[in-house]
Length: 151
Image (cartoon, helix red, strand yellow):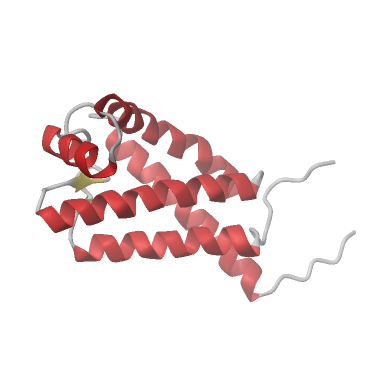
């Protein structure tokens, strides 16, 4: 029997993993009922296309695939499996949220994030920064507690 000695960093990393997974699941559940309507508002798409130089079709595909990517990444975060990969994907996704929410906030474009749960306001930007910090923490420090066992 292995002697497990877990410290504060391990528990904090585990908590961050679970919190990030819960956020991705929640945002996916709130975006799936209307991925082509509220989540892809025409004004939002046009603004993102202009200021990020991403073609309109690319933004449409990103909006359609993002909830599913969150659903796929969440079990990896929860279990601690392929954690570097999962946290790297999480960092890229949250960075995209931070950039797009900053653009929307700057130009006063109403954006409904995570369904009707979170409006784009300065605290939404702060929330994105917090999530990004958690994802970077997990990437750098590892995941702490693992919920799977490889024989």
